Length: 151
Image 1 (cartoon, one colour):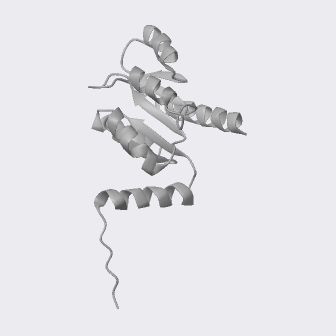
Image 2 (cartoon, rainbow, N blue to C red):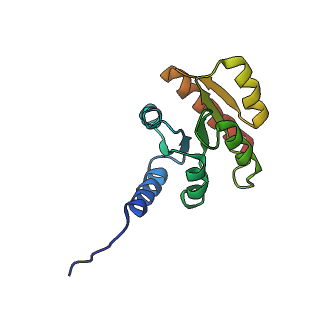
Image 3 (cartoon, helix red, strand yellow):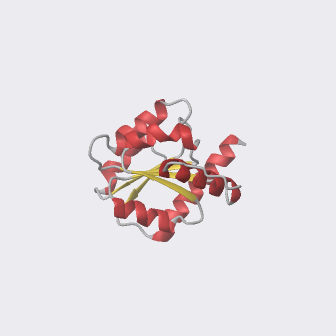
């Protein structure tokens, strides 16, 4: 007897993420960036984690309840539609995400944007282009701080 199960590609991706998330690590990192190349690069750099990428803030908010709460959010500042600053504000207003560590990434000049990023609710700010080690260190730092705060 053969059992045939039909699932959409989206359902299969969710199952795959769930299995990876709990089999390998409990750390899921959400990435919001409208640049597909940037999302792919970040996913490759953070291959020790389950990384779920979203092209828009709207996509993140529509799917995060199905995926579970991420451990960290990496978000580009300059995006069409809702920018990274507004994304931070919305995350801080969402009861299920308000304590989520956020790292904003931007190609804009650092000083002015750092201040605005912190005011919007970001925990860290990183300029593009960034070094692989710098990204990994910031992610580890924020995950460690988050774990310590919830212990």
